[in-house]
Length: 411
Ligand SMILES: C[S@@+](CC[C@H](N)C(=O)[O-])C[C@H]1O[C@@H](n2cnc3c(N)ncnc32)[C@H](O)[C@@H]1O
Image (tube, rainbow, N blue to C red; front, side, top):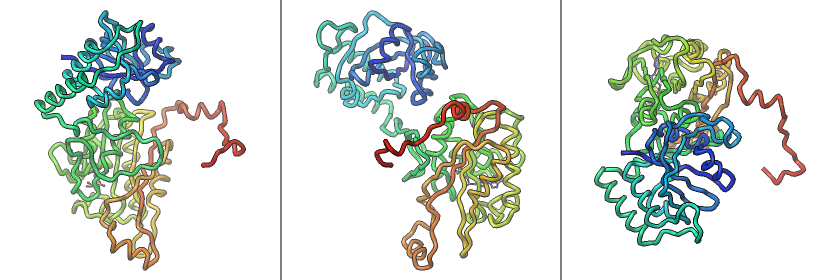
């Protein structure tokens, strides 16, 4: 039983794949490539010529920079492949994959791999075609589609099993719902629950499968559920655990060794606006207007710094407060404390949608009494200094990027 993966290529990069006996990918397919094992089946989608070639066999585990210079380092997640005699190629590949509901860059079940292999065998040319590359017939696609629908139904697999968030490319993140996919992530009824999309984006960018992720204040367990589904090891703690896989613990003292953790995510209380529990140790019982709130959370930052490996990332989600005519810039104050210990990497603005004040009555009040409802939270992304310069900082010393107004076409 082997799984499969369709990797993408272009006219520029395709030949090197065959010459080197190597397929490569960038960050977008990193996790999937790293999960490939010898014997798994691979296909190559040329997104320019719109052709699909296969079937190839993986002869190595997926890894990082197996051939460091290949494609000038642009596709560092790589797997070695064996070309077999029976390879075939089809055209109108993207349309064909759409019709049978198979996606490039997502791991294929064994039955999907077999179906794709059979489609290529039934409809494709040899890989160096002398005649125009064949387009799969509507009938062949229809049969494969029916075969896949039946196999998915028998295994109880639905569209939700393939549902994954996209990776964010800007600093504005906006999610209309708390979770995605078939399995719930955390409990969307838990006051202050984190959108699972945030944790998904952080672990996809900053960790690899098998890495250890820690959430010292994990509430209803969203971090645990996201990490498990993506193959990360995870520890979740809370002062008052809500489920049996959450360990009871005060975030000021985390029972883990120095420099042992690959990423930390924290969505702390933002002050005393939500009553999480009665624990006298809960930060949710301290007002964000009091300096004590920041002093206590700084102890968590120091502890996070201790357990993180050098160079690894902490994401801290936090919102400002406006209560009884007083604005408290909680996000800036937390940022200031964080940067006493960590290097700033970025700050994301996350739209707030589901807070209790998102009602017509509150919007009305905000206008009548001339104040603003909180529309966003901050996600501060920082890293524990490693002693080494970050790649971005090294880059900046070499060249200074300046925006050229004369050639600008607008913003
Ligand atoms: C915003 S909630 C976290 C939500 C969580 N990420 C989720 O998705 O369900 C903040 C959590 O911090 C926890 N907490 C407050 N003080 C704590 C402390 N001293 N140590 C550990 N957890 C604490 C609260 O119990 C609460 O569950």
